[in-house]
Amino acid sequence: MLSLMTDIDFMKYALKEAQYAYEDGEVPIGAVIVANGRVIAKAHNLTETLTDVTAHAEMQAITIASEYLGGKYLKGCTIYVTVEPCPMCAAALAWAQIDRIVYGAKDEKRGYSLFSPSLLHPKTEVLTGILEGECSEIVKTFFKEKR
Image (cartoon, rainbow, N blue to C red):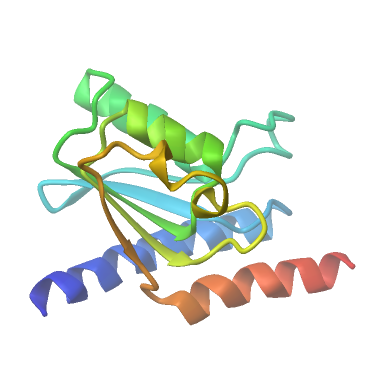
């Protein structure tokens, strides 16, 4: 139970990042990477801001965490992301050899699990549905306002 509470707490940090994206007119997805119980990277979508289709929250967080750790591998780390990673992000997380992926809401249209669950590193643990309602609602609200 302690682990689940910790997962909820870190997902709340990711939701704060999603809120920053929302306020900036970005698709509201947030991510944090945790090592040894500490947040070492936090990020949100920046695709519009940077005019870069690869500037997803996960990609930004991977870069920040790698710089923090001084290496390209994220062994011993967990990423908390508000929405299921897309195939691009899942593959990047596999290359980074992250230990755990925890995400809130499924992405029914573009999530990696629809296309190729094998994109992840075979040793990566995945936990889904943490704060799913909140993670889903911010995205639904964003797109409802855009239409």
